Image (tube, rainbow, N blue to C red; front, side, top):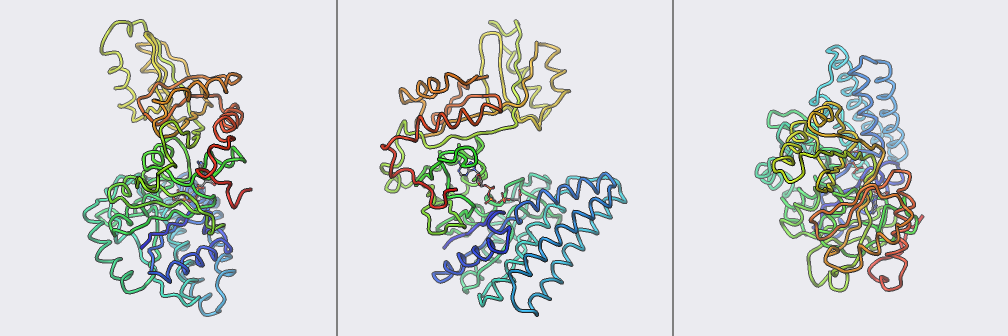
Length: 471
Ligand SMILES: Nc1ncnc2c1ncn2[C@@H]1O[C@H](COP(=O)(O)OP(=O)(O)O)[C@@H](O)[C@H]1O
Ligand SMILES: N[C@@H](CC(=O)OP(=O)(O)O)C(=O)O
């Protein structure tokens, strides 16, 4: 059976949540599914603002935002739940959770310090609240459904903010705690994104981590499908917010999907694919607002991929904004060894991840996420080289099977972009992407131009679909 993950937009309003319940109820007719939910959209951001305000002793601000979180969920349940008795019970449950959140605010305010550990505790309330409302509404509608606290199953290391699950332990937990319920016909409703350390402290898997939770649970339970329900018709040829003509991709390989996710396509969390590959479980990306739309199938099954993925076929364009180029130039690079080692050692010591790289005899350019930009690191680089920084740039990557090997793709990319100021071109080793960097204000023109170049032809019909829910 399937693990069904619903993202923030699919549970963010009463209408969206009701739609998700209907989708789960339809699936349940075949066999009870495991349902993994994110927080209602916008709530995790609010929880982070609450935590920051509490850490800075801005108690009134933190409490006011906690009040907004309470109001959102009380309004949600009020619209979704009909029976006064269930409404009352659920109001108590929501107030209890928000009460705990407020207690945490006061604790952090008194101590005057926000730690990574307490930040994870704050962030966990979004998923705890959304699943509480969803499970009660499902039960009220006559479905055999049970709310399960995923922290009993998802045991992680204590790397708060980016915890990694202890796989063997989690697999045993999933098989002993969740599987018997599913086998007995009970739909299990649980949280994505959160877990618990061995010592019982709440952890999170990193922003957007609910996809990862669902994929892991699917692999541990040996399910035969992982369904990621979101607000667009699957993985698309580009973010439809940037390219209104974007089409949905019918079928793609695990490698294409993973690469796209790493390169910035927000629709999938980058870690989602690995557990699916391990057990060869197909991943479906589907639209909860248009459940009849075909969405995207991610698989390595050659029968499904036949005619849908071949060398040189451009599948999608990914964009990562908020990047920064660091240009490093030194005569010491010329004909000498050890320079790169010295350079990357600095990045490694400051824990800054390098994304794109381009080199020449005497200079090297790298991109890093602007949020990880570090003045100390730059000062250290300047002790042995000349350094120039360019903020507000974006990486754009064209992804498709075997792109590098196919003649003409790079030529088409760069000749179509002749009027765009390319700040850097990546000569990376990946066979399946060609990447470059542009200033952020050039992103829209660059991606729309590329999209016209690669996706306006008739020859791709059947591989790409005009989305059913097109805006
Ligand atoms: N290649 C892409 N295909 C589809 N959606 C994309 C792509 N790149 C970026 N997106 C964006 O990802 C959004 C869905 O991700 P997200 O907001 O995290 O959903 P959820 O709340 O369901 O987890 C879409 O609304 C879309 O704007
Ligand atoms: N709620 C978490 C986890 C998550 O995966 O959310 P979403 O599925 O809405 O991207 C976050 O906002 O990071």
